[in-house]
Length: 330
Image (cartoon, rainbow, N blue to C red; front, side, top):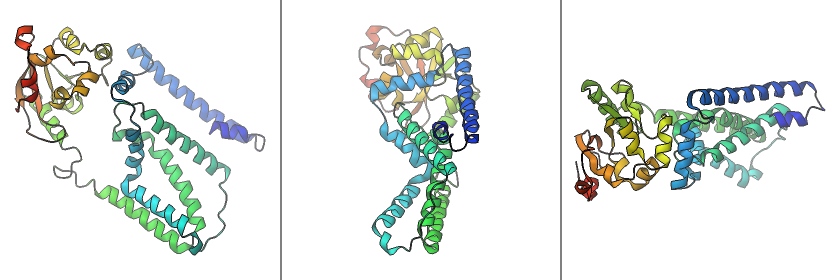
């Protein structure tokens, strides 16, 4: 936006001061964030950014996942609607009564360019993230809304009133569908049913307090309902873990912090890629884990939420074979 207005300053000098203010606001905001990070952690970037960059080294770039962010904003139906409208315009244009659309004015142009570049940059940026989550779309909502509004306005001016009304009805139907499929929020409609097991595990820890520290890779829900004392092990919200993760010495961190229990899904231990990117691909460590309680018997996706005790008294001779642990059905 700043560069576009800078180019237009010869036409309207007043336009120059507005983007300067916006640019300063952006720069100051970023500096505040970096300063905050450095003051509390000793690094300008949060550990989550460094951890996810490390994950990319193991599993490769995630272009599909970053493109999925756009689908999360407008939904599958929204994508199909946009594609359908474009096909109709391209192949049936001669049959559509058209009018000469107005050109984009300066504000619409700069909004379209800035929002488009922001969206493209955001998708490219998150292709370097080892794990893309739907809630990352929060910063995409505004630029996507701007793009949708400006292009829709231009499109409606190209076609007659009847078609424009149909376009609005179809868009409204897409919005209603995307909202409708989320409700009611209950056991049958939950998009991630495995999180209910995490809720159950957190409540169990709260009601049955362990006289020891507990760690988890997926610690958010579990830790919240436990009371806030579950230690995060994947490094996304725990800066201490990073050097141990990248050196594959997470068991040493557990020992240093006297974490005697681990609670998480069995997948975190049985999937080699997760062990590699988590820094605990260690046969000895896997052998030392003893099941205390299994919370579910799910056979798909995230399954077998389990509470483990880390038995550090086990010797090397006791841990020659780890396959039984990995294949055993709880």
